[in-house]
Image 1 (spheres, rainbow, N blue to C red):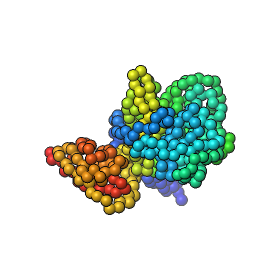
Image 2: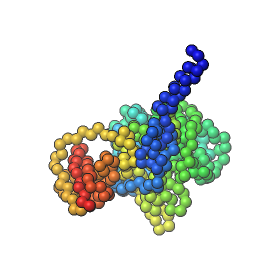
Image 3: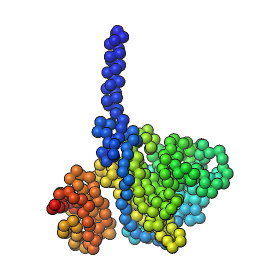
Image 4: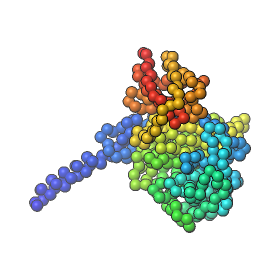
Length: 413
């Protein structure tokens, strides 16, 4: 083969390869969306966006005044308190906020429990809080899910002890170090920790073996978060959430959403930051949970400052309007409704009748003509819903007691 032919072949191969792997912003909602891009390179930019949320229920007080972690395991929601809160897991009734089950981890000590993670076989409790940056007894408790039943009251955990590979200085620096941590997820057979950097408000992503023993948390990447990360979760469809607050002013609450990432690096794909609220309204937000449909829960510790006294609460939210459908698509088993909810429209307002049909967790989703969800909200017979669009034709889906009822909304211009 002569040199000219070889050069032509190599040039063609490079052209084809580049055509198949075109980096850029792949999110149509972004300001710099590139329709030709096939790999999200993390370059997407967005206008400032406020993430809607709603209060599900107050939490049991004073029992859960220090609620610091939340996770869904065996289709139930669990939480715990942080430092000094005892070595107990609490199962929540998400309608009333009541504690319906308490499990004591017999061989655990709560130095500073901060977050939970779950795999298909285990639940992990992160005793990872390190406000002074001086702890040498950081650990994660690993509990088999098979040991947790509705009647369980005690369990024993395996222990993962660890240190950070880049920490050499253990001098006590209260709220002035970059080795605090309050966020933990399980992904691809490993634990992943996200630091709460008091000094520069970045977060370091560490990878930690999930095998009990003495381990080293390896640093993988860094995100310029812009606030203190206090909780994390990841869905089975690989959507990562990082929640927290800025410890200045009225302590604004924010959330990062990461998806479409590759090779175990969460920050090399799509990243979007949301404004949520502030501590005066939400309290000190400490934990986040996300389901496969993009919706989830947030909890806060009691927040007391000056005249403000915000009790612990369970909040609901949904990232579904901001995600491609592949990250939120549900396989819904929709049994025939026991009754049909009457939806009455008056201008831009929807009203709901048949109070006996609506359970405490009933929700409505409204979609525009492109199939994008533009509203997600809990509903009741006594709460009308304002329609948030000027589109002529919209669609709604009411999810109630395991059934789904759909219909059309027609707006007159």
